[in-house]
Length: 207
Length: 207
Image 1 (tube, rainbow over the protein chains, first blue to last red):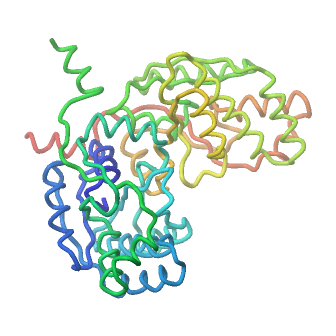
Image 2: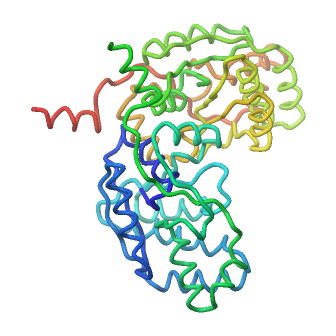
Image 3: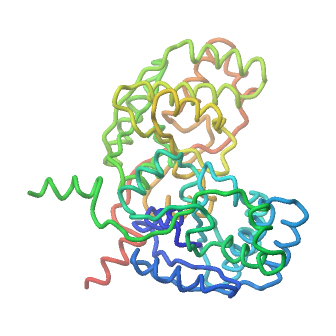
């Protein structure tokens, strides 16, 4: 499970937990210590976790794309697909998952590219939240997670955007970041609630 | 969970089971005893089940659409959306789910129509398999279900297509069915496997 420390990839991991041995994987370009941020969040969730380094050429290409487009869609999709392909190449890779939701505007990987990765590496890709509307996600997040939410420039997160922003800051200055990225809400997982919702109902019936 | 007795809606129900109190619902126009077929499959899966009658005008409109188009896409989507809306109208409806998969060509409800239903009735819609490629679905079906598969004209199933075909047969003759519907594989659930995959692994570690 590609893991950013945010609520979506955390919830996606929880949904897969009854059916798969979930390992969280955070991709980094080593520009910022996002691996450590993710490691801490993964520990709180109770999942195995590791950090994988993506080649800097992936971020360089993303930089070209965002400067060319003036907005981050293609660039973030490029990094996301590179992360999926990086995991697909691992010898014992079978299932690769992410936290992409139905209503996400980015990243939204092209299905033709996903199918190409699935066919070339013999893996299967899944996004457990892809079929979920906001209502379902909000309900499950509330049941299972304690999160901190804030504007994208104030929350420390281990997603691609964090390091991508850092590269843009170094290359073009902080001003350029707010021109290229629309302000949006980010979340970071603080804690996992142990028993609630259906689980609480089950515990109560034992009393 | 909209339930046809096939592998997709059965698997989708199993994926939701750890998180929701799942009730299977089969929609029928009372042309054929599809409710009984579904009831039997639901019992084998171990889920609560009920049958809901859809208004015949829905099937009449679907008939107009398939005759007009010459293929079933819009017609099946029309029935599927009517089924979702029928459930959304129920007073205590909160979450409505179906077995739509990533690679399905039909039904694929338009997101604008789904969001309209969500907003109008205050419900949330989800398709747990929408983000799943064939590899994931095949793996989980093999782990949890025993199914019978066959060409669409030989397997008894409780989906919309079964009764829709029956209406076409009555109105236009059996020949017309094969002209309008491409032959495709259908599945019907025979049995639920009790413990396998991750569950087996967990049981083994206790020995």
